[in-house]
Amino acid sequence: MSPESLLELFHEIADAVGKQLDAVTDWGPSGRRDGQYAADLLADEVVLSRLRSADCGVLSEESGPQNLDRSIVVVVDPLDGSTNASRGVAHFATSLCAVDPSGPLVSLVAHQAGGPRWWAVRGGGAWRDGRRFERLVIPVWEQSVVAVSGRPPESPGWGQFRSFGASAIDLCFVADGTVDAFIDMSLSAHGVWDYSGAMLVCAEAGVEVRDAQGRELLVLDHAARRTPVAAPATIMDRALDLRRRLPL
Image 1 (cartoon, rainbow, N blue to C red):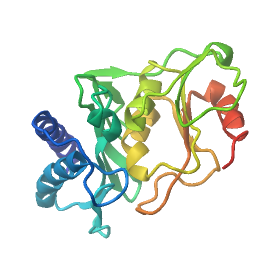
Image 2 (image 1 turned 60 degrees about the horizontal axis):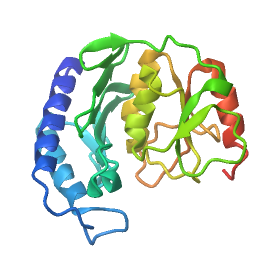
Image 3 (image 1 turned 90 degrees about the vertical axis):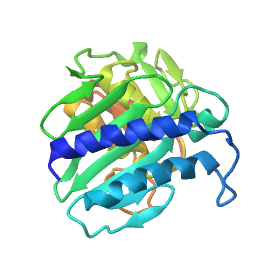
């Protein structure tokens, strides 16, 4: 499929997942594994049903790897922030990223609680709700508002912090300037589906995303976990230095 066709498909998938989530009545656990909700599985089936005809491999948080030998593999988090969704917190998303041998090719992160939709095609810029954008504001660390996952250390030196609970959205917030950085304070807790879609949006907007231990982030391994940190280049070193004060 062409990048344009993939992007169109991703929009269709996000729309379909949104309709499925609107109809969910059971926000309880799936009973299959800790931290998984029945709604996660419903959203995953919506995604898989549409990707099966696209001749792509899939790496989904909920259903694992399928056909990873294909020329394009779609990394999927059908419902990022499912705990938020289960508790009525309006901060959760669907994240999709098509990966080819050169890396992320097309991605989309759709806020599924009435928020924005971000997307990117490699070399084609970052987009939010149909408008192209770049990260133009250069933040000062001491005045920065930083999104976190997990508990930050004492005296971080930033201006303020927020803990939203859906990393795909949080990373896109860094890309579009809603917040100034994102730091995963937890111990290698993020799978590639948590950040790959937003990572391409960040790259196209001019924001760096790194692993706090310097590991490769884009790994098509369902068991791999990473510690993503996102920030404009001017404050990336401060963000990484802060994260390294905690266990890695």
